[in-house]
Length: 279
Image (cartoon, rainbow, N blue to C red):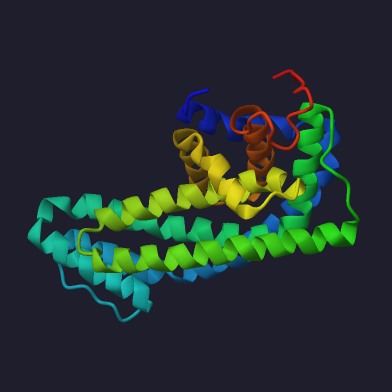
């Protein structure tokens, strides 16, 4: 099968549809409650940052000097770099303002996703297990609950380390090229999409206790499909209120994507027949 971005976009939609299945409802409630609480806390924190961001965008569009007094250090770096670009290419001011807003909401969605995924990891693993059982007719190998909880939390720490390592490298590149604003935005978008794909396709592989390196190999099989899925999840997480419901849909969608599009003969679970579900 070829790599098709439409399949990646459709995976999140399919995940949302799967959540309407009666068999999965008991495994959705706890992740949704976790998301709701964290949404209130993180949204409150991000709202406090809007003052400095608003001042910056206003000065950018009016071509006045940038006041970085109320900004955090990373906002100030991006602001000064973008302001310099805008002073040279004034016709780019509106585009730069839009890109800065995109980066702000990308950071919001990324922060929200990291925290919720760590806390809800065991529940997401259970949801992925039930989705796979629903799609294939067979569940992953059983294991004691305590062992599963520790394994999933350990896996989240492994992914977090990967995200931080490469995230720092990309941040440094983005800082050096911040005067262009376009390069950091593209890097952030591609990296965010890749991270979301890793996060949500990992649950079914982790349920089969497959190594993290194998996950990356699986995702590289169909890069466009992978990035389209991750990008769709990332954009959905950037939307307040909608992001409360994205996580369980992404878990179900990532599991369906692996079962139906990404795995090959010989991968865990391929000895089972994939069931056909009504839309």
